Image 1: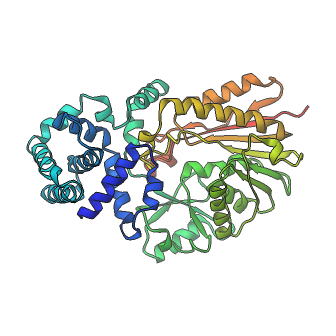
Image 2: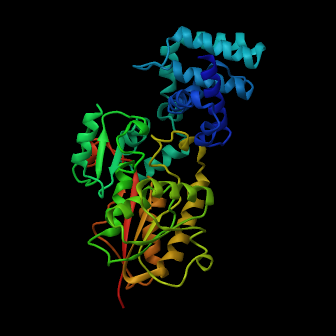
Image 3: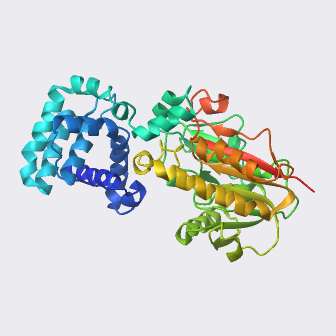
Length: 432
């Protein structure tokens, strides 16, 4: 276990230094990757509390690797209904890990952790007085969510620390949710369909994808319910046969594949500015048996990739803070900075301005972000509609708007303890 604790504290230290947990885990030993991810998630969901207690127990900041080990151990020693290890085991292994890294720090680590155990109730109570420790988000993040959602900010912050459900998208060319539920039952996997989501099933607990019937063959894909809404909004009441469609920021390709599963005759161009991430789109399409034209390009630089022919529909799943999917990526809240919101909102506006002229009259543009922040959602769309002539665009009154990850956010969301946080707007281009 000390090795796993070392790997986890290394991951925590990397996140605190500004590195993505996904990138860190990709370099972890394959045999330890799953365990490291599970422990890292647990620590990051409690990092505000652990950092505050570390500062109280050891006011003089220790070296970064020792501090990361202490934060990791303190988070895992936090009162929990299902602790990963017994307290004494975790302390012993943390001391062993410290002895390997910095022998002189072993007694210090032992003293700090044992004092925490003796005084745990008092330290936990004290942590609740500090908003960062109480909500386990940076203060600027807490304040922005509170400002944007004054009635819902507390459950939104709490929801971000829950384990998300595992939702699947059934390839409608290969079956239905009902037929796939029967296949899951044969495999001993409990799941249910979700009202209002024609292609979705939700598992009662997570399973490795290789255990899912037909996953390798593309019969089913992993995709959150909120992300599954994009295809229906794009296709609407139907597009003309062979419609030209642009997926402007396509990676990793889940929405691209869903569009082609539902409408295989689309002439779809999938762009992404990152050639490496675009390769993932191809892998996704190959697995589900779909094809599209792929181009590595910045969608804002229209002259570098556009052939001059207008599109019937455009999907702009814009780069964003990803503040709506923290429960799936708990490092996000600790990696983002306030200035990131401003920079990303500027990029989103540039994308909207660049792509709107490429849409045919009568066509639709679906704008999406996996963000809770209004600056990346409703405020972004309001500002765009102010920039263009009033007779040129119409916001669909049935646009979902902000889809909040709250248990009471509709019957379908309640059934799965809430879908991810998203924003959707459907803009129709008026005919002259």
